[in-house]
Amino acid sequence: MKVKTKLIAAVLCLFLLSTPARPATNVTALPILELVRQVAIKVIKAIDLRIQRLQNKTIWLQNAQKKIENILSKLKLNEISEWTQKQRDLYKEYYDELMKVKSVIAYYQRIKEITRKQARLVDEYERAWKLFKQDSHFTAEELEYMQRVYTGILEESLKNMDQIFLILDSFTTQMSDLKRLEIINKAADQIDANYDDLLLFNDQNKMLSLQRAKTEVEAQKVKQFYGIP
Image 1 (spheres, rainbow, N blue to C red):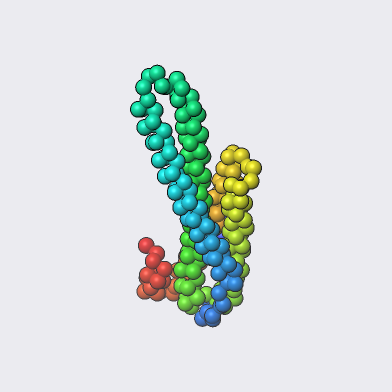
Image 2 (cartoon, rainbow, N blue to C red):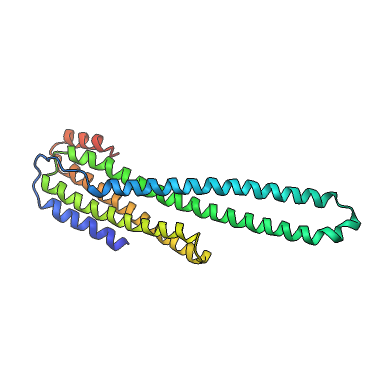
C-alpha cells in the first residue's frame, strides 16, 4: 500500500508541475460521490437498527437469567437435586445465547466504525475539493485530473463496502467467526488505505499551491486558506 501511495504522489507531482498555473474554472461534482455517501448512510442505519434489536434481546436474556438465579437461590437443599440440572441447562442456554448476541453486537460496532471512516472520506474529499476549486493556482486541466484521481479513490472505497454487505449477510448464513473477522479486518485495512491516499493527495495539492505562491504575503494567504501550520 505504501508503493501505491508513493505512486499517487509521484504521478500528481509530474502532472501538476509540468502545467503552468492559470485561473481555474468550475468542475462538476463527482457522480459517484452521492452513491458512496448513500451507501454509507444505508449501512449505518441498518446497523443501528440491528444493534437496537439485539440490545432488546440482550435485556430479555439478562432478565431471564436473573429469574433462574432467583429460583435456584430459593430452593431448599433437598429440592436442588430435582431442579438444578434442568435449571442449569436452561441457564446455560440463555447464557450461551447472550454471549452470542453480545459478540454480534461487537461485530456490528466494528462495522459501524469502518463505515463511519468511509463517511469521513467523503467529508474530507468535499472539504478539500471546495477549496481547490477556488484556488487560482490550479488550471482547469489540473482540476479535471484531480477529479479522476478522486473518482478512483472513491470507486475503490465503494468496492470495499461490498465486503461490508457480505459481512452483514453472513449473520444469516453459515460463516465462521474467524472468516467473518478476516473479512472485517480486510475491509477496515482497505478503507484505511483509501482514506490515507485521499489525505496524501489533498496534502500534495496544498503543498503545490503553496509552492506556486510568488511572494511571502501570497504564501501566507495560501497557508491561511488551507489551514497549513
